Amino acid sequence: MYFIDNPKITDPKGYTAAATRAGFKRKRKDLCIIKSAVPARCSAKFTRNMVKAAPVLAGMKTLKNSGNMLQALIVNSGNANAGTGSQGMQDVAETVAILSQKSGVPENLILASSTGVIGEFLDMEKMKVGLDAIAHRLSVDGGAGCAEAILTTDTVEKSFGVKIDIQGKEVTICGITKGSGMIQPNMATTLAFVTSDADIDHGLLEQIFTDCVNRSYNMITVDGHTSTNDTALIMTNGLAGNPTIQTGTPEAKLFQAALMALMLEMAKSIVKDGEGATKFVTVSVKQADTFENAKKMAFGIANSALVKTAIFGEDPNWGRILSAAGMVDVEFDPGKADLQINDVYIYQNGNPVTLTKTEKQKLMTPVKLDIILNVYTGAESAMVYTSDLSYEYVRINAEYHT
Image (cartoon, rainbow, N blue to C red):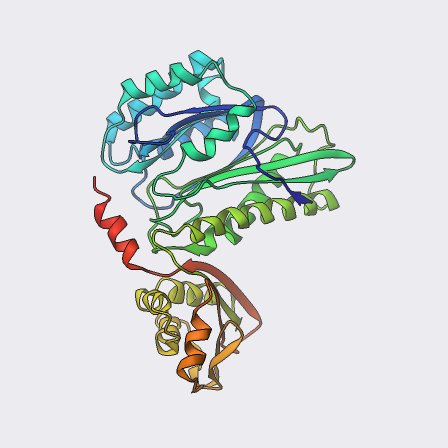
């Protein structure tokens, strides 16, 4: 397995794409199409937020009716088409119908996705003009613009790809993602699209993708806020020509390892680009009684505004960290706990460790910080990725209006 340099979402065999600026945003591309030459097996995860955007509701229905088969995606940024009622659903249906007519892909194999400002209707004239501009110029090279077209407040494009060998056939997996703020996934996050040319059993694909989402995207947080539009999906069209990957085989383990590596990098890239972030923080809770309890404590630390501001202020405030872990209704004895930052103990055997001012400053200066809490109640652990909370985060979100 190896990562691809300058990957595109169209690097796997059989995919074409195109992107343009339709005018949903003041600058940058904001509309793209991704198409497989043949219907692809799909696994998708959508937000569990009770407030779901129109494209999420429509997409869930589409995949159910198609037996989780998918051939084309139409994605816009700058407008989430969320909180738009029946008009929002009509706009999704019209968008899909137009793309179907222009691309020859059946409507039941097309999924629409949106991201951006909540509560505004889609400008369908811009959508129509944008679709006219790109629907007939899909190409492999056109995939390069898709990573830009799905961004909102992101500062960088997020595109990744890996290649593996499956019984003598080269299999490619590529993904693009977006996200910077409004980040705490619940079964998915922001937008994440993965394409592959692997031939893989559909049930196995669902199992593997679910596990990879749970261990990557569902383990990140910037501000603890689950979006209305969160969508993560994978399409696999089988055009690599490999024998079908089956459950319980070495090939299944290899595919899962490659997809996990890809999606973990995708998920981490969101945290690294967190709105106003100056630190990338890994929070590990170890030796807990269950994984779920370890996860609760890790997210308790990662989502604490007081912990996040202490990290921004470069203060190794063990009291904030320990109390954040203690407020999520998980029993442990703080008198036996150990707490480290970048392998340096700041709290050990239930007692604070005295550090000099110089040691404290040196400890918190790095851009990457590892916070490790050992609670000694069992053998399970969980790792969550987060960022600090800065003045810039407040400015960005104070100025991001509906």
